[in-house]
Length: 153
Image (tube, rainbow, N blue to C red; front, side, top):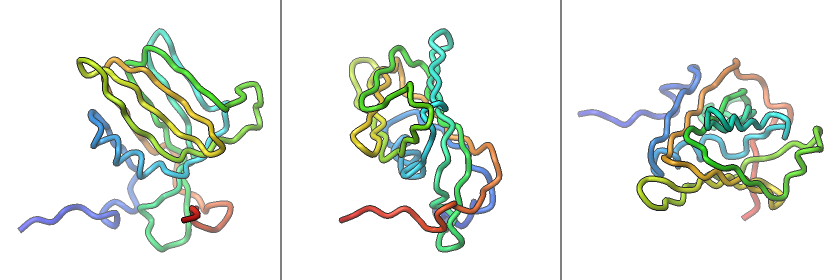
């Protein structure tokens, strides 16, 4: 009999996940919930059709151990357009907090990736096809707050 993998199975290893459909993206969304990033760490390479964020994600897979964060790259391919609201890109000190990521399909596999941020901010990516990659790029470090993020009921 086989069992599903658990967070504990990969607790000490860097994550590398790929999303090719909405169900896959839901996994990345859960893992990146409460990630923070400075507005200066958003990049859209129009020519390569890639949008990427360098995020400091909370390591939910760490379980009940010391709260940790890790820097990760969250990249989306085949991006045709990027829109944002509630984000002052000129404010280099602005830190965004990622609450959720979703995919709204349109015709022929295309769609819109929506990244919802705390404080009514949002980023929308019009994509030709859904392809996202999350990859840890540093060693985990102690969460500066020393606590896990919480959300009011």
